[in-house]
Image (cartoon, rainbow, N blue to C red):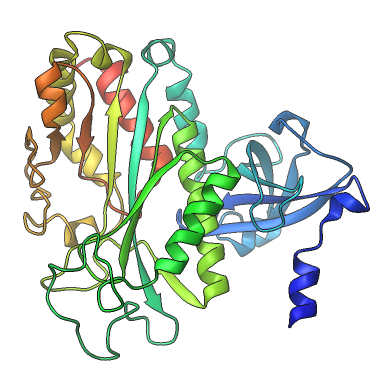
Length: 356
């Protein structure tokens, strides 16, 4: 195995200018990440330098068998923490051979929102809190939980320390460092309320980059759990009963909100979000009704609410924002399995472009 490890860690720059580019895309379910690699003649610094590439869409539920070719368009580049050197990870979106975005290409629609002049002028910032749960591979039960049984009740696990409270920290720390290496704006990690559940935060990031970075951070996490022999789930309520669900709280601000008097802009934005509550909920992740029950630090899925420092509200405004009269707010409704392209662009569209 030591020889295998040596080969995996070979430094290609000593012998060749060629690099490996891992093309990443989102499959037909909207959550399944796919990737494949190709050799390029030399280092690349911009997605425009990369070739488009096809894949078999019939094998990802994105094209029929008789016309299965789907084309990947490179959109964002990150350093590869697995192969290192000049090798790269490439976030792509998918198109038909005729150049039309395929139905599951949510990035295309998000890019249209983020290129709108009103949105560009407001420089929307996002900070996404991605919660997830680690499961034992063969039994699909959270790591650290007795097989077929339950740990002690919630309380000691949130940001907990110790072998009986923190399960999977080696995976979490590996992911943290790998994201920093890749160039992702990962801003922190913490243990969550349910044992075996963790969170990482990406941001603040501007516009479409928030979606690109969160998807690649998810990809890196999938790869690390693959190596560790642990299963990763973004299910918003992996364990039924008196256990916290998993969300992707989305913190948001515009230039107007960050400037003096921004609190009034924030209140108007929240009012608009309330008017489109049902539309947002329908796009905020599958199975979210199992999580948004009004318990376990959530608001009821059918009721829109907001408050200062209220973790049981749909929208939370921080005490610092209230005190300073400017800043950001947090949309607590998105589920852990949401598509960040959809959620970030929808928030921008509702609060900046949409006129009620």
